Amino acid sequence: MKIALRIVVIALVVAAAVWLWGVFFPSADKVIRKRLAETARAASFDSSQSALSKMASAQRLQYFFATNVEINLDLPGHQARQMAGRDEIVQAALAARGSIESVKITFPDVMLTIAPDKQSATADVTAEVKISGDADLNPQEMKFELRKIDGHWLITRVETVQSLQKPEAAH
Amino acid sequence: MTARQATEPNKGFLGWLRVVTIGRNPATTLVRAVVLGVLCWLVFNYTLLPIRVSGVSMEPNYHDGAANVINRLVYKRHEPQRGDVVGIRLTPDDGSKPSIIYLKRIIGLPGETVAFRGGHVMINGQVLDEPYEKEKCDWNTVTMKLGPGDYFVVGDNRTMSQFDHFFGKVERTRIVGKVVW
Image 1 (cartoon, rainbow over the protein chains, first blue to last red):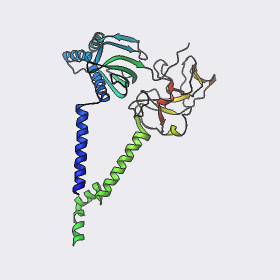
Image 2: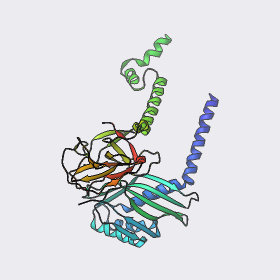
Image 3: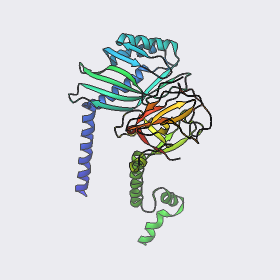
Image 4: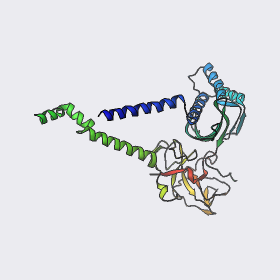
């Protein structure tokens, strides 16, 4: 009985040590996933937020992107849009907060590929966007490219991906 | 006397409650619970994927909000067939269980050519009979050639504009499984 108890205690101590190691020294995979989730949260806003809080969250977005970030959005039924640089993203986020009541962005599925040198990574994500008053927005596949710059994982490129390759319309 | 003392706690409401909640033999109940838990974990992680339909692209055969289940093992035995309603993952397959999937019907198989002409599906230039289609549509597309690992999928709701409907060529690796009903 004593031996069994000792084994249980040792197992618990080892499990706690592994958990603590993960907390203090998280893997690149964990850090990037957290970073993407924070990006989605910063990009989201709702009508209950004050104007100041909305502005602050739009400004906070810049900390997730590299200075020379490129964004290419091509959503079905919408005009394709390109953005370049952090400032343009913040401006777009501020403009959205001025014209839309609420936006909720989540990335429920994330598939990460981290380069062997652990300095760059690609994330294939499913983006779910809920915009107030727009019920027909479909989930969208997106590709994020990230790079470790000054110790932080920053997004360097974002693009939409067509999961289904649609044939051209004919007349 | 000892036997009588052992059965004493099982008398009355508390005894009944104890039997109902943890059984006559707690150790056996614990083993059963663990086995059931492991079984559920295996089934819902690797075999059956419970889903809730969201959207109208599969109307009138699959309604918005309806519950269904996707069998993830069915295509281990054979390849997807024309007419199968399948789940399609949006991110490349990494073995994980996707949270969001498209629900679509397979109309084109690898190597075939697919096109819409006046609302009819043309497979290798021949009109495809679609008994599940209730409404006529006016979709028109150019002909698309499918590669060896490609399938052509589309929703059943062709009353939608073709520009608002997600359909087209998809890689075999993105097909998660087939709906059960």
